[in-house]
Length: 385
Image (cartoon, helix red, strand yellow):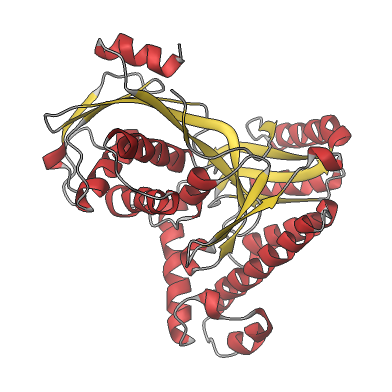
């Protein structure tokens, strides 16, 4: 029996109606572009969050996580309110509670559920553990109640849960990758239209490996800094008379920068516009089978995130510099920043040396030991049982 289903039965005294899973994600390129209506190129990870679930008819939502040492959280669906969340609807429980609220707020019929959650997506690593939980919960509830949502609609609803209920002003890229990715492919995502293309991305066939270097650190300034960067981008777009920074073409960047007086806004704009261009260029290289040539663009993207967007940190910079010095084709931070993970494109046989070099560098710098694992593009959310 599936472990989540087994634990659900032990916890609630009856069996679930099914088990649904959604993966974490790595963003190959296209960071902080999604809330600027731009482009991104993520792929799904093998690590996933599983949700065993069954319907209720009494307006009650019971939530339990195998990863949190406490009993089930019991919530009244009618009391779910982003402005005044009920007791218990915080921490990890805010994400599935937010999904239930978003479904109800959209006029979709949900009369209650029992949920049990298991996950091997690392938290705080910039690998979208929150999106995996949201998407797995959304898929479970929409299947249980027969709600006619497409995968992009499901992702958008999961994002609304995080934006409006949890209060994190993220874009839609994480949820789209978790909901829509396919095995062996990166997902080219237009975050304005939600149009998507599946781009073949087979590192193993090219003798390559993509390492995820989880620094295992998260700096506390991330939440407020994220919101400030988003606001700065929107203010810059308005000053340039644009709906969003996505509408500023790459060949018009220098002229636009000259029109902005604020140096911080100029840096933010330069990152977003050049990052959109990097997504386009890397997709072209992947389609041509020229995977190694993507490496310098990854490193260029990290420099932009470090210097223009200012969302890196010493641990991420050390991971990137050390991996590149040890022979990587290119490396960069991935995710929102201020900690979390970096990724590095290497020859497959170089993995032991790169792992040793990064681990040694972290030890010598007095940082916690990083967690380093290979990543292969995997499938998106699905029903398991």
